[in-house]
Length: 255
Image (cartoon, rainbow, N blue to C red):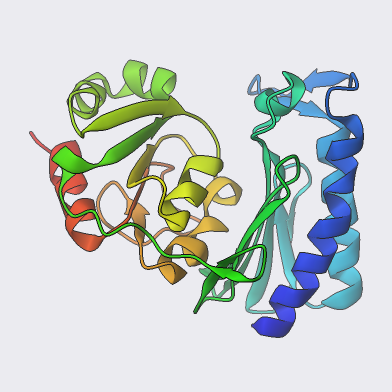
């Protein structure tokens, strides 16, 4: 895994120059059939990563947000979100990320989250998680929800689709903040945030984060407590400790 990690860190370091070149510089926006935005920066960054992966690992499969699935017979599949948080990107918010993960037989085994405007890269080879390749990551040791800092991602969607769950979350924890995209989950791995509840994610939005959070000592699953994979329903809990994760599962699944 270390060789794979070294390679994808080098690839994403170069790929991150693409969105940085376009950030706050004005870029044409296209809206997909599902109304989500995409820009030339999204497409160019994914193309760069795909081409580099094809050179280094020609037998591996690839699943990317912008250009879909390229299947092979290999048990290994790369998963790419070239700009996680395109709405943040086009509105000048520097908290967009670049996510790349490696799956083996559908299980996340390696992950990279690069924050181009922050010069931060969160990564894991499946055993140890790091920030900027040197600082070891460790989640907080918070075990009770009433002392936790909780981030609620996609609150607008959750409020419409899961109003009772949203109401319970909105009354839980010591502190709450509403947010979007990958960065709050990275902050869970770094020990700054105790938990993040997310909603309506695609595999490339979250699977690269699975090894990073697990390698830092945290827990990340769907809302039923099941491991995340390509067929997950997009509802996600990341938490600093198993005890805190269990309390959030109970809260979300109350009748």
